[in-house]
Image: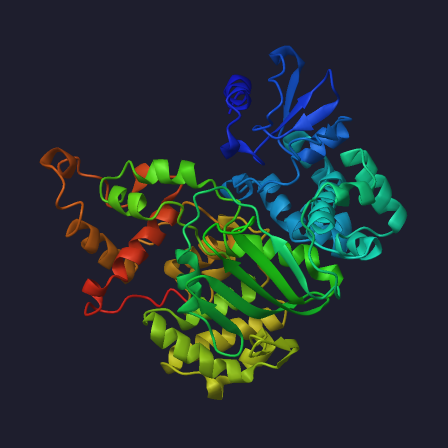
Length: 502
């Protein structure tokens, strides 16, 4: 977007752009979200920033009226496959808190000095400033949503000291932590720091079908899902965690809530980031649906289920294992095979709610061939990939780009373009993947051709949309989600099984 497109967005107070850029006003020294209800400033006094960190660096403070830190993030970090986008995915996952700028730079293949220069040019702030803004946002969320002690909030958000925490909150919000907490009218009941309930902001509309997607793939003892909830155990850098996400359709202040049953406070930022990635909460559904609806085959599905989300991945290595197990078999068969393989996993250090196990590590998978089911060649390929991950020969994650992911995964035995595409969709959040050879995708296309699209008028049917849905780019991953949903309709239960989409 250029300057005037953004200016028109703030003049219209359009909430769709909240979190996607920030508006700084020179005459007030304040930066706001695009939908801020304050009077629209003169264009000559406005500067737009890609990140809140860039606004901080330029000397601006957050608006107390619109709370620009209390909005969903931008989907740009998934759309962009450049260094800036890759870096932001890793920063949001807490890499700087764990490994510092040097660790972030090493993962991206640059020196710290080069990375500082690139991010400064692209985003207006260096990695430390970007990480500081992420800590401030996490701290604000915890202050207004929980009754955690201020010291616990400081360390859970990633600050190294209480003094640093206090100074940052004062600089960013022009308030003390106590005053910031008092701006909220709703507080969680007092209790231990391992039982937290937080509201999860997102851009509406939100289709809860993602819960059903996760529920039918849930592995007993590790995951539990219903059409409106999802819970699981998870291994994080500092220990095991357990969480639950619930959707109530909008009857509460926060329709989507996260309850953290157990977590090491140092892992809380990473957990929040990964849950947001899992449920695709930084997506811009109106932009996506508008693009998808231009294809006459998808238009009825989009109208019937606005706001479809693309499930992310809580653990990149786990996702690769699930993808390899689920190749060429049904969802139910993949779930059965993964349930058997889960016996190789270890007990969770954060059990509860009937969730007692952790998904097996690559080391455990590599030594558990006797628990794996399927063709011998597939088992050998899975053990080979698990051993490569366990030994450090295969490393990939949120900071990869699509080309790099292909280069790492395609040489593996048993890994083809479908597997790479599926991993890219869920680990990288790549929005423009179309799995043309996927059997369920083909079934979905047939379902739409035989359904509402086929019943449309002749002018609509004669538009001859492309077979690869390229008109919906860069959102073809979401087109894939609609096709998978169409393939799962009862009318197609007797068709040949597609890939398991694990």
